[in-house]
Image (tube, rainbow, N blue to C red; front, side, top):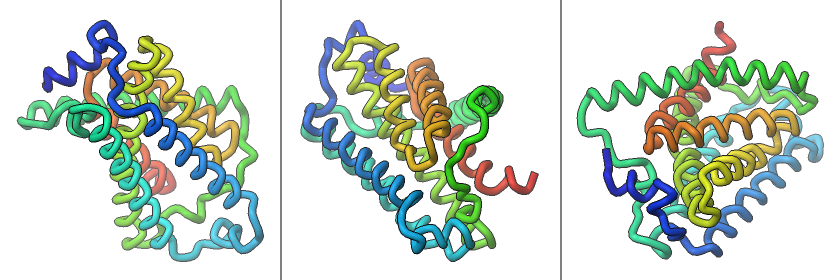
Length: 244
Protein backbone atom coordinates (compact mmCIF):
# COMPACT_ATOMS: atom_id res chain seq x y z
CA UNK A 1 0.00 0.00 0.00
CA UNK A 2 1.16 3.53 -0.69
CA UNK A 3 3.04 4.76 2.40
CA UNK A 4 2.79 8.39 1.34
CA UNK A 5 -0.99 8.16 1.32
CA UNK A 6 -1.01 6.46 4.73
CA UNK A 7 1.14 9.07 6.42
CA UNK A 8 -0.72 12.00 4.90
CA UNK A 9 -4.11 10.65 5.91
CA UNK A 10 -3.33 10.44 9.63
CA UNK A 11 -4.60 13.62 11.37
CA UNK A 12 -1.65 13.87 13.76
CA UNK A 13 0.80 13.89 10.84
CA UNK A 14 -1.22 16.11 8.54
CA UNK A 15 -0.25 19.37 10.29
CA UNK A 16 -3.27 21.05 8.70
CA UNK A 17 -1.63 21.14 5.27
CA UNK A 18 -4.25 21.82 2.62
CA UNK A 19 -4.10 19.68 -0.49
CA UNK A 20 -5.56 22.49 -2.61
CA UNK A 21 -6.24 26.24 -2.21
CA UNK A 22 -9.35 27.14 -0.23
CA UNK A 23 -10.73 29.10 -3.20
CA UNK A 24 -10.57 25.93 -5.24
CA UNK A 25 -12.60 23.98 -2.67
CA UNK A 26 -15.18 26.77 -2.57
CA UNK A 27 -15.32 26.69 -6.37
CA UNK A 28 -15.96 22.94 -6.30
CA UNK A 29 -18.76 23.38 -3.75
CA UNK A 30 -20.25 26.19 -5.87
CA UNK A 31 -20.27 23.95 -8.94
CA UNK A 32 -21.93 21.17 -6.95
CA UNK A 33 -24.53 23.69 -5.76
CA UNK A 34 -25.24 24.73 -9.34
CA UNK A 35 -25.71 21.08 -10.28
CA UNK A 36 -28.21 20.73 -7.42
CA UNK A 37 -30.16 23.81 -8.54
CA UNK A 38 -30.30 22.55 -12.12
CA UNK A 39 -31.40 19.13 -10.91
CA UNK A 40 -34.16 20.55 -8.74
CA UNK A 41 -35.31 22.72 -11.64
CA UNK A 42 -35.37 19.64 -13.85
CA UNK A 43 -37.51 17.84 -11.28
CA UNK A 44 -39.97 20.71 -10.91
CA UNK A 45 -39.56 22.59 -14.17
CA UNK A 46 -41.79 23.00 -17.24
CA UNK A 47 -43.70 20.05 -18.64
CA UNK A 48 -41.18 19.67 -21.47
CA UNK A 49 -38.58 18.52 -18.94
CA UNK A 50 -41.01 16.07 -17.37
CA UNK A 51 -41.72 14.11 -20.55
CA UNK A 52 -38.53 12.10 -20.17
CA UNK A 53 -39.57 11.07 -16.66
CA UNK A 54 -43.16 10.22 -17.61
CA UNK A 55 -42.35 8.37 -20.83
CA UNK A 56 -39.13 6.55 -21.58
CA UNK A 57 -37.16 8.06 -24.43
CA UNK A 58 -33.57 7.48 -25.49
CA UNK A 59 -31.43 8.06 -22.41
CA UNK A 60 -28.08 7.82 -24.22
CA UNK A 61 -27.57 11.62 -24.45
CA UNK A 62 -28.33 11.90 -20.72
CA UNK A 63 -25.94 9.07 -19.86
CA UNK A 64 -23.20 10.60 -21.99
CA UNK A 65 -23.61 13.99 -20.31
CA UNK A 66 -23.40 12.33 -16.89
CA UNK A 67 -20.17 10.56 -17.80
CA UNK A 68 -18.63 13.78 -19.10
CA UNK A 69 -19.69 15.78 -16.03
CA UNK A 70 -18.28 13.17 -13.63
CA UNK A 71 -14.87 13.22 -15.27
CA UNK A 72 -14.88 17.02 -15.50
CA UNK A 73 -15.20 17.07 -11.71
CA UNK A 74 -12.16 14.81 -11.46
CA UNK A 75 -10.31 17.18 -13.79
CA UNK A 76 -11.26 20.03 -11.47
CA UNK A 77 -9.85 18.07 -8.52
CA UNK A 78 -6.66 17.41 -10.46
CA UNK A 79 -6.26 21.11 -11.24
CA UNK A 80 -6.71 21.99 -7.56
CA UNK A 81 -4.09 19.48 -6.46
CA UNK A 82 -1.71 20.88 -9.06
CA UNK A 83 -2.09 24.38 -7.61
CA UNK A 84 -2.02 23.39 -3.94
CA UNK A 85 0.34 20.47 -3.29
CA UNK A 86 2.48 17.69 -4.67
CA UNK A 87 -0.30 15.16 -4.07
CA UNK A 88 -1.56 13.42 -7.18
CA UNK A 89 -4.96 11.87 -7.90
CA UNK A 90 -3.43 8.39 -7.51
CA UNK A 91 -2.40 9.40 -3.96
CA UNK A 92 -6.02 10.27 -3.18
CA UNK A 93 -7.00 6.82 -4.40
CA UNK A 94 -4.31 5.18 -2.28
CA UNK A 95 -1.88 3.95 -4.88
CA UNK A 96 -2.46 1.26 -7.45
CA UNK A 97 -3.20 -2.44 -7.47
CA UNK A 98 0.07 -4.31 -7.95
CA UNK A 99 -1.07 -7.93 -7.57
CA UNK A 100 -4.20 -10.07 -7.85
CA UNK A 101 -4.36 -10.70 -4.11
CA UNK A 102 -4.91 -7.01 -3.36
CA UNK A 103 -7.46 -6.78 -6.15
CA UNK A 104 -9.46 -9.66 -4.72
CA UNK A 105 -9.21 -8.27 -1.18
CA UNK A 106 -10.52 -4.86 -2.24
CA UNK A 107 -13.31 -6.42 -4.30
CA UNK A 108 -14.26 -8.64 -1.36
CA UNK A 109 -14.28 -5.73 1.09
CA UNK A 110 -16.20 -3.54 -1.35
CA UNK A 111 -18.88 -6.15 -1.99
CA UNK A 112 -19.19 -6.97 1.72
CA UNK A 113 -19.57 -3.29 2.52
CA UNK A 114 -22.21 -2.96 -0.18
CA UNK A 115 -24.22 -5.77 1.41
CA UNK A 116 -24.00 -4.03 4.79
CA UNK A 117 -25.07 -0.77 3.17
CA UNK A 118 -28.14 -2.38 1.58
CA UNK A 119 -29.34 -3.35 5.05
CA UNK A 120 -28.62 0.10 6.48
CA UNK A 121 -30.33 1.77 3.53
CA UNK A 122 -33.51 -0.21 4.07
CA UNK A 123 -33.55 0.71 7.75
CA UNK A 124 -33.06 4.41 7.00
CA UNK A 125 -35.77 4.40 4.33
CA UNK A 126 -38.14 2.55 6.66
CA UNK A 127 -37.58 5.17 9.38
CA UNK A 128 -38.01 8.08 6.96
CA UNK A 129 -41.05 6.66 5.16
CA UNK A 130 -41.87 7.02 1.44
CA UNK A 131 -40.29 9.80 -0.56
CA UNK A 132 -42.44 12.27 -2.45
CA UNK A 133 -39.89 12.94 -5.21
CA UNK A 134 -40.82 12.14 -8.77
CA UNK A 135 -40.01 8.65 -9.97
CA UNK A 136 -37.13 8.41 -12.40
CA UNK A 137 -37.60 4.74 -13.19
CA UNK A 138 -38.17 5.56 -16.85
CA UNK A 139 -34.64 6.99 -16.95
CA UNK A 140 -33.21 3.56 -16.16
CA UNK A 141 -31.73 1.62 -19.08
CA UNK A 142 -33.84 -0.39 -21.49
CA UNK A 143 -32.18 -2.44 -24.21
CA UNK A 144 -28.61 -3.65 -24.56
CA UNK A 145 -27.11 -0.36 -25.74
CA UNK A 146 -28.56 1.63 -22.85
CA UNK A 147 -27.54 -1.10 -20.40
CA UNK A 148 -23.92 -0.90 -21.59
CA UNK A 149 -24.06 2.90 -21.33
CA UNK A 150 -25.51 2.63 -17.81
CA UNK A 151 -22.62 0.39 -16.77
CA UNK A 152 -20.20 3.05 -17.99
CA UNK A 153 -22.16 5.70 -16.07
CA UNK A 154 -22.04 3.55 -12.92
CA UNK A 155 -18.31 2.92 -13.19
CA UNK A 156 -17.67 6.62 -13.82
CA UNK A 157 -19.79 7.57 -10.79
CA UNK A 158 -18.06 4.99 -8.60
CA UNK A 159 -14.59 6.19 -9.55
CA UNK A 160 -15.17 9.92 -9.92
CA UNK A 161 -17.47 10.58 -6.96
CA UNK A 162 -15.18 8.68 -4.61
CA UNK A 163 -12.22 10.75 -5.80
CA UNK A 164 -14.15 14.00 -5.43
CA UNK A 165 -15.88 13.39 -2.10
CA UNK A 166 -13.96 10.75 -0.14
CA UNK A 167 -10.62 11.54 -1.75
CA UNK A 168 -10.34 15.28 -2.27
CA UNK A 169 -13.10 16.84 -0.16
CA UNK A 170 -12.74 14.61 2.90
CA UNK A 171 -8.98 15.11 3.06
CA UNK A 172 -9.30 18.84 2.51
CA UNK A 173 -11.84 19.07 5.34
CA UNK A 174 -9.55 16.97 7.51
CA UNK A 175 -6.79 19.52 6.94
CA UNK A 176 -9.13 22.44 7.65
CA UNK A 177 -10.73 21.05 10.82
CA UNK A 178 -8.12 18.64 12.18
CA UNK A 179 -10.98 16.26 12.99
CA UNK A 180 -11.61 12.99 11.16
CA UNK A 181 -15.16 12.87 12.53
CA UNK A 182 -16.04 16.35 11.27
CA UNK A 183 -14.42 15.74 7.89
CA UNK A 184 -16.31 12.49 7.33
CA UNK A 185 -19.59 14.00 8.49
CA UNK A 186 -19.41 17.19 6.43
CA UNK A 187 -18.35 15.49 3.22
CA UNK A 188 -21.21 13.02 3.68
CA UNK A 189 -23.70 15.86 4.08
CA UNK A 190 -22.35 17.68 1.02
CA UNK A 191 -22.50 14.42 -0.92
CA UNK A 192 -26.14 14.01 0.06
CA UNK A 193 -27.06 17.59 -0.78
CA UNK A 194 -25.39 17.23 -4.18
CA UNK A 195 -28.15 14.72 -4.96
CA UNK A 196 -30.87 17.17 -3.88
CA UNK A 197 -32.85 16.67 -7.08
CA UNK A 198 -33.89 13.26 -5.71
CA UNK A 199 -35.85 14.77 -2.83
CA UNK A 200 -35.20 15.56 0.85
CA UNK A 201 -35.56 12.04 2.20
CA UNK A 202 -33.26 10.64 -0.44
CA UNK A 203 -30.74 13.36 0.44
CA UNK A 204 -30.73 12.03 4.00
CA UNK A 205 -30.26 8.46 2.79
CA UNK A 206 -27.40 9.46 0.48
CA UNK A 207 -25.80 11.56 3.25
CA UNK A 208 -25.71 8.44 5.44
CA UNK A 209 -24.28 6.60 2.45
CA UNK A 210 -21.55 9.24 2.16
CA UNK A 211 -20.66 9.00 5.85
CA UNK A 212 -20.43 5.20 5.68
CA UNK A 213 -18.16 5.37 2.67
CA UNK A 214 -16.08 8.07 4.33
CA UNK A 215 -15.51 5.71 7.25
CA UNK A 216 -14.54 2.95 4.83
CA UNK A 217 -11.98 5.23 3.16
CA UNK A 218 -10.46 6.12 6.53
CA UNK A 219 -10.35 2.48 7.60
CA UNK A 220 -8.80 1.13 4.42
CA UNK A 221 -6.70 4.24 3.64
CA UNK A 222 -7.73 3.61 0.05
CA UNK A 223 -10.65 4.44 -2.21
CA UNK A 224 -10.52 1.20 -4.17
CA UNK A 225 -13.06 -0.75 -2.03
CA UNK A 226 -15.29 2.34 -2.12
CA UNK A 227 -15.13 2.44 -5.90
CA UNK A 228 -16.00 -1.24 -6.18
CA UNK A 229 -18.99 -0.95 -3.83
CA UNK A 230 -20.20 2.36 -5.28
CA UNK A 231 -20.00 1.28 -8.93
CA UNK A 232 -21.58 -2.10 -8.24
CA UNK A 233 -24.37 -0.48 -6.21
CA UNK A 234 -25.26 1.79 -9.13
CA UNK A 235 -25.11 -1.08 -11.61
CA UNK A 236 -27.33 -3.20 -9.37
CA UNK A 237 -29.90 -0.47 -8.75
CA UNK A 238 -30.18 0.36 -12.44
CA UNK A 239 -30.23 -3.12 -13.93
CA UNK A 240 -30.36 -6.12 -11.62
CA UNK A 241 -32.69 -4.77 -8.92
CA UNK A 242 -35.57 -4.51 -11.42
CA UNK A 243 -34.93 -8.00 -12.73
CA UNK A 244 -34.88 -9.47 -9.22
